[in-house]
Image (tube, helix red, strand yellow):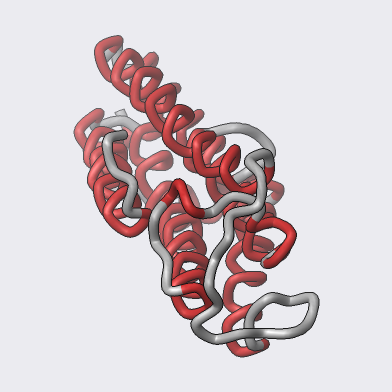
Length: 199
C-alpha cells in the first residue's frame, strides 16, 4: 500500500496471491483444491495483464509512478480498461475470474471449519481494493498528467499493435475465465483429485 512504483506494487501483490494458492492447498478439501488450481490459472492472466500494461506505459512515457498516471484512459484506452478488469478481478468482484477462485477458497474454508482463512481472505481482498482502486482513480478520475512521451505513438491504440494484442488477450481472458468458471471446475474434478482432497 505504501508503494508508488507500479512494478513494486504488483510484485508485492503477487506474494499475497501466491498466499491464496497456499491457503487453498492447506485446507485439504475439494473446494480448497479447486480454488487453488483456479487461482493459479486466473492469476497467470490477471497479473501478466497488469505487468504488460505497465511495460507499455513505461515504453511510451518512461513512467512507473502511480501518481503520474492521471488521465491515462484518454491516451491508452485499451490498456486502461484492461487494468480496470484486472484490478476488479484481483479484488474478487464478479463476473471476473478472481471472484470465482476466491469463492471456492471461501467454500473450502467454510467446509473445513477454517474460519481464520475466511477472515484472511476478506481482509486481504479489502486491502487489494484500497490499492487497486487507487490506480483506477488515477487513470479514470484524476486530471490528465503532463507526461513526456519517450516513444510517441499516434493512433487510438496508444501502443504498437504488437504490444496491444497481448494486453487485449489478457483482458478478454479475465472475463472468459469468469464466465466459464463452472466448466473449468468440472474439468479440474474430471482430472481426478488426490485422495487427501476428496474428504
